[in-house]
Length: 221
Image (cartoon, rainbow, N blue to C red; front, side, top):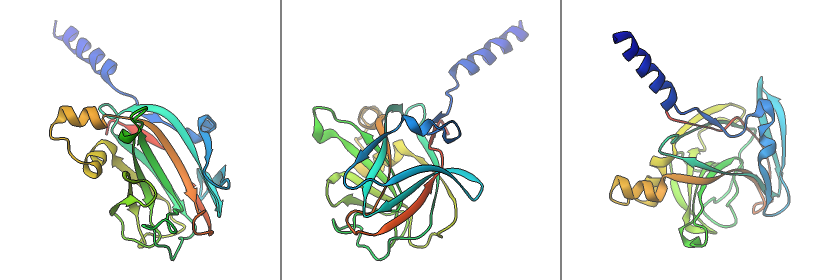
């Protein structure tokens, strides 16, 4: 009897385990499933090896275009987003909180789509700041408080070096857009994202940028 109890719980554990979600799968060219979205001239995205890592290379020359994946991610199951990135040089000097300086050598952002209630659309941008400290949050100068910028890397970070990142997106959304007062209300407001995007852009500053992105993966922990 004890043996069957062990088997039962083993099967239950396997059934309830949530697999990691690799959104890019660079080794299988999964990035081809992402759509190109241009706001200005097109930035160039290609697969290349960088320091023995397969990466998505992004080159921007006074351009602003990104790659977008429309995919619902249940943050109650997979709240953690992991990725890696590297930049070859910063965009210094820029006033990133101004419209003229709203350019980033790397950014990954998540979107909660409000649909017809467009005022409920929210976006959190994880960015590599060229001239600010890391761990800062501010409103996007074009979109206001519905789009938040968060500097995961800042002016003290090294160029030419890979950094591995990991964020609890659900907790970050609560932090930057506000606690709704209860777990139920927070899950209703922030429990699912609808879009993930990558963008290297230099259209406002007219500068050049070269950066590299590794796989973007959502996981339970």
